[in-house]
Every structure is written in C-alpha cells, then in structure tokens.
Length: 133
Image 1 (cartoon, one colour):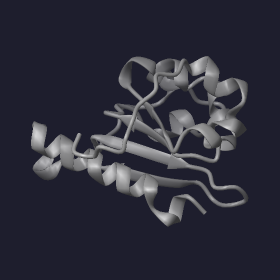
Image 2: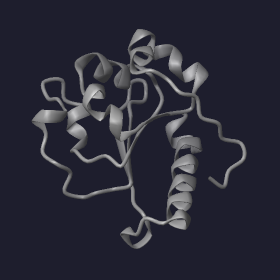
Image 3: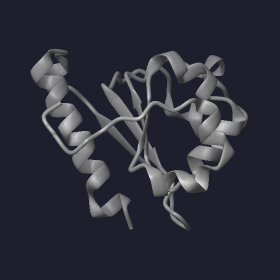
Image 4: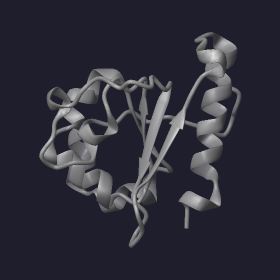
C-alpha cells in the first residue's frame, strides 16, 4: 500500500448487521475478503449494505454481485463471475440509486505493483466526492 493515511480495522460480520447506519461515522468503507463471501450473502448483511451509507469493497470477488444485492439470492445460488475483477464495490447513497465499481489489475496481471496501483484507485474512489455526498 502506497498511502500512509489509510488504516484498516478488523470487523466481524455481525458488527455490520447490528448498527449499519452508524458505520459511516466510524469508517469510510468496508472491505470484505473471500473467506467471508458466503456468510456476507445472507439477508441480514444485505440490509446492512443498503443502510450503512458507505461503500463495500469485495476483494477478489468470485461470484456475481447480485449475491449481495438481491434478497432472495445467496452466494451458492449465484453463478461464478465471468469478469474477474480484482475488486468490486457497491454503494447505496441515501435516497439514491445503488452504484457499482469494478477494479481490475493492469493487463489482468497480479503482481505487487499492479495490486498497489489498484488499491490506490480504490482509495481514491472511496475518497471521491461522488460517493461521499
């Protein structure tokens, strides 16, 4: 990571569901990694994704994003992602429409430089005015 002003705090998924509307006062975004994808597709977390007013970034998402946005679907119900992005983000602005972002690696090559560059792009997107209105 190139940025020095970024810090990560570990959260349990249960914390997301308890008070999703309070997450935006503590965090700029929530990153979800592969080991939590299946659990994060459960209904209680989908509600949190919609109410938290912050972006959720899925790192190395291997399923279609609808597993996290459509109430009736779970991780196991959804086909594998056909476009393997390094990361995929969703954001529900208050009173607005859901926004999605895909973040790829340069030339689809995973190496330290490309991963750092992609994380920098993710951080700039989170920081941008368009998602913090």
